[in-house]
Amino acid sequence: MRIIPAIDIIDGKCVRLSKGDYDTKKIYNENPLEVAKSFEAYGIQYLHLVDLDGAKSSRIVNYKVLEQIALKTSLKIDFGGGIKSDVDLKIAFESGANQITGGSIAIKQPEVFKNWIQQYGADKIILGADAMKEKVAISGWLEESNEEVIPFIQNYQKEGIQYVICTEISKDGMLEGPSFELYKRILEQTKDVKLIASGGISTFNELPNLAELGCEGTIIGKAIYEGRITLKQLENYILS
Image (cartoon, rainbow, N blue to C red; front, side, top):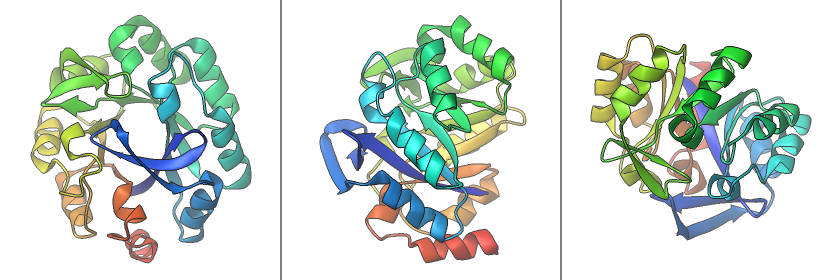
């Protein structure tokens, strides 16, 4: 299972939220590149970078942070937040993203998102299927759609999507454990999906459980920043 630390960006700084609530913002480091380099130093190869300013805006905002990390580390970056047009997508890839995650656009402009899958390939486009009570949430989790998360994933699998990031929003940033039950049902009801679990990871012992379920990757945020999981533990896991 791939280990994918998260860096969330507001005003160019590394922050974390709780349950996606912008009012709970906590700044962990004013230099995201410094954080990314610390991950790389422990053998981590992947990074989940989220433009939280972009997520609630109408366009990508913090692409310069992406560019800097891509230029100065060898991390393979999946980038999300604010990618709402072909122009935004082009900026993200030109700034060094290895993959992009689309959530809001997959709900609001499905034809555009489907075109991205066809144009760039399923290895480059990740479906963001973030859920609140199993309904897909969009626009930086500020809006709830009427789409149920499992049928939403199934519909996009028909369009060729392979990678799916699923965050159970009620778990995100709460350090109370991930939504094992939801991931189990997704993996049972979607064939061959590469599911990346996100939200609620609180202890190292949860990682083997997610791997056993069949998750392709897991995104870890606050547990690293709060010292619940050490980079050394992650390094040992990757090497084992």
